[in-house]
Figure (cartoon, rainbow, N blue to C red):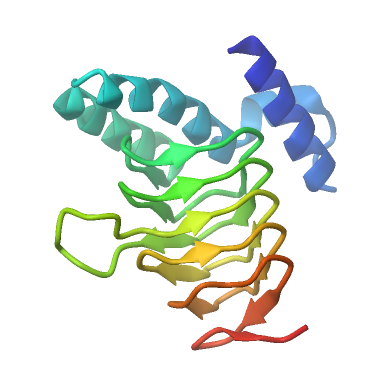
Length: 169
């Protein structure tokens, strides 16, 4: 767990030019606090303590402004800059080294009990207030522009922006 925290702090410090040091990142970055809490709540969820995990995830949301469903899968060195308003749904799957900004939504597009939230592969960057909906895949090292609405798969390495999101690179 401590190795994971150290890696996350180093990743956030490297990605945020406003960070003045690792101690500041450790103490003052609610996006990271939400991710760390999620690690514990995800274990509770998988162990069958679903109600407890959901209740505690709501406490984390109140404290950090970040809502990560305990059923979601979150990879290593996932960073959320500013954090406020981020929503990550139950069947979302986030790879390693993903960086997202405030207001990002990884939302579902059906009420059926199926995979209904995005899969975000390794190295993806998601701009502020971007909305990704449905069982779509955002390919490795892709970039999603701020304010974009993404409802279709994004190829690895592509940059998309707009409403609806279209490739811009």
